Length: 466
Figure (cartoon, rainbow, N blue to C red):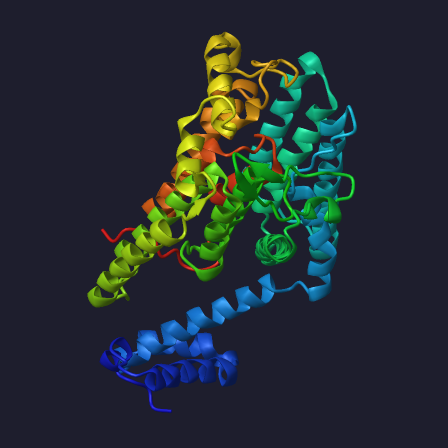
């Protein structure tokens, strides 16, 4: 086919013309691969070459390189994903063994074993290649965490170190096949949790039975599901509603860091599903996601015309009004609106907000020079608290990992997100400060490693145009 001019390429008015240009490029890639680079060099240096020929050759070369990278990244097979997914689920799902006095230790042991097995599987299946900075960060943080806990040694020193090292190495691996398979595992994990929530909702709607699906998948663990403050809260395959919200939000962040896109359909469905659990944290996650998606769509995607942008705003306002009026009906003496207001207002019997306030008071009282470099895990700053972890991941990290090393990691993390991915991603990651993950959880360090070392698989669309 005839090469289009530069103006035809820039302003192709119909989908057929755009498809024709794509076919042209792929035809060049398919039939002229052996001479592509030589032709590109001659066309670029020749004074008789037209601007459109030069542009076409540059695009062809970029497409060829992209296709090669995707083939390498897609070097995994379906059987690899099938074998790795159970390990991924066990490693990244919170567990609770209620009848065992060493519940926490056993649960974390199973998860760390699954995480290390997944790491070994990836290494043996696709080979292992790691860059110096990735190995340096992973080893430094893992060894430091282990050294701090030597003062009061427990098995968590080994488990936490294994989590930190394996997660950073997986996130920053130089092996493209690792990233390709991890992306599929994260996406599958989101779908897996959505299916669990849908099944629980259907069973409750049809029969009125509240089922613990978590214990069905993980027979050695149990979930906290049922009636709370007059509302039915479902958890799907997670141990509690807040954990479901945190897990889905973390997966959305990982997908966004990997693809360079925040607002896609799966991410939106995953985030909105957290509201079904009636977790107070879900409101925070949804608000951050909507704000980040708004910035990405309205300030970064120049392909959307002004009419579509205005229509999107009007539609968002209408949907928000519909949710408030229709989605928060009265349920007995309590409405969902009153329920969320009570959850955020705090007070006795109001759930995680009460635990956060209690833990925050205890942390302020425990502030000392020891926090500069960290404390062993047995040195709890609030031994009487119901759940100190509800205070948030990073505040607990400041206490146990140390203010100095935590600040170094967080500055590198924040700077990488801001400089490489833009303001929309900076807004998206803010709720991570108040998630309920333990700071040595592999999800947290997978996010750190992905933000600092991994490049998006496609060009990030959220950078502000200067």
